[in-house]
Length: 336
Image 1: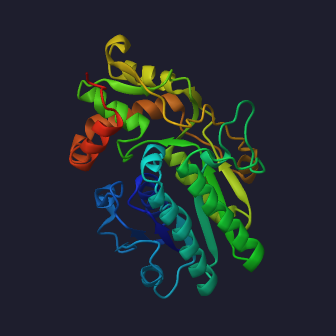
Image 2: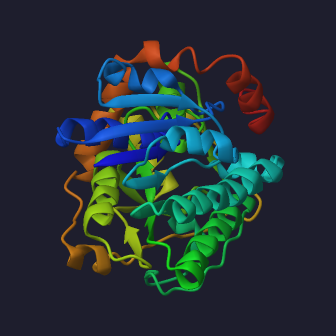
């Protein structure tokens, strides 16, 4: 199989590229990435010399660049390319509309025109919005409450509309909060881990009782692979870890793993506008298809902390320049 992976230099995308090359000796991967602030070529240094791997620096909104990356044809497109951080979507929503909606449209047109066999849209549980009780299955109404979630929901709706209108062979995965190696340190776990390594406090939004379901990136990538290989066109599949935890619980566990006193390092900051209180996914559909997560949460979290401890050369260059300016603006007063 020849696969075009868009956004392959990002967190989940780079882990997916690496996993596919490692587990499928007869696969080749074309990686198209714009290399925005969170797209890091260093994420894939270890596969640069692999003859089955090619990289194109381009924007998925550029139809000509997408056509060039497809070249003489691909069997499938897996779309990871997206603006993803809710906090940034609040301050600059237009970038999210462009990539997550217009970019998805450009890819769908390429699939339709080139008769590509499969298109898999990597989406998020955030499109379901706040889930007060129970869990959201794939038929749950979409109720996004942030510009990020709304842009992803818009992309999903385009994907499903192309199936109905054109018969395009599309599928969607909606993953829960993902953690693991190579995650840009604006997100909760890598931000808190790298702060604590540097003996800095961590910013907990509001009371910290927001609930998220945590999924290790290897399990997420295997779930996406499973849908790519075994999913039914036109269908949506939830990919969750089954590890519901409050943000405060995650914070306390990270403090324990790094030997820090909660009284000294936790700083409660003003909550994010429109912050969803709880996400919870029903994943019976994907379990029935044959996939289940395999990474135990406590083991995966400890291994993730160890990875950031052992790879300071990866994240220290990131935590400078643009990141420093963003961090100071986002968490003004944290160190006062």
